[in-house]
Length: 331
Image (cartoon, rainbow, N blue to C red; front, side):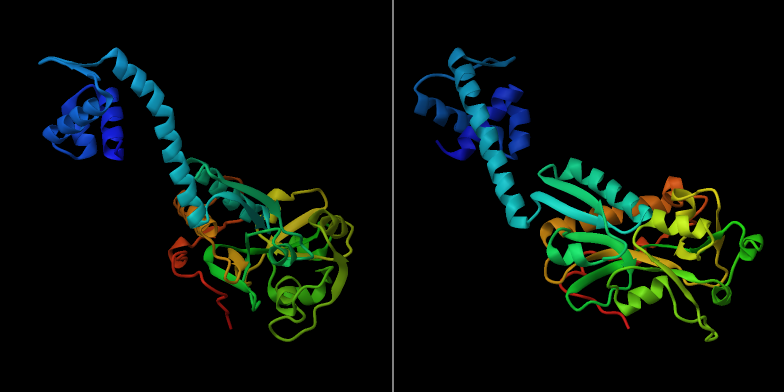
């Protein structure tokens, strides 16, 4: 039996109308009739009762339909699975996120993929503060949404997805808390909590700069491994924390005041992956994240962070189809 005969029979058994069947197959009515007659000759008996008013299945036609339909669906599913595997968009994609705001984008992108790519599962997990690239390099993560830039020879970097301002978390009793805002020069007057672990120098400078723009030294406070630990030390007056603006929403607590900067550059976020491992699954996830970013841009920002973070989405600068294939170094 030829495939076109099988598909023609099953569609006609569903539609019970030669015209609609012909339209769906993009064939002429005469061709549909020829295919059905050819199949009936193979079987040796009529499969349809045809009159000027209606088309109906014979008992033999119903039997053949019931026997063939499950196998036809199984063949189609098998071909779809094979194609998905060839494109690299089946299985499970492990995605990391560095902050709660990045986690929102990752979660919504994963939800969006469920409808269009049910064969691809997505598992998400937070990136450790003290080891920003270790799980990506080990293969525990396939891709992660994190702060940019990335200056690692073995990692590829996508375009900026979103930006947000910076805040300084200080003890509510600290003199800076009365001002409402701070500048980068104010960092010379308070020790900054540092991050435990082996962070690249440029990464550590993002979180704990050594000097103010004018060159004044910035003292370093205790090292921390988790956000809650950091905020406990901040509330206790042991140091201040340079952080993203959305921290004020997700980690509001007594004894800690969040002060926005007047002059600090915003934080940028983008996707990062192992150089050369830009699989089909990574690219599909990247496109989903882009659509989520566009939606967030139209909405102003993600709802839980609208007031505190003033995050903005810059999807117009991010081109997932052209930014893959290797690490993109920034100066």
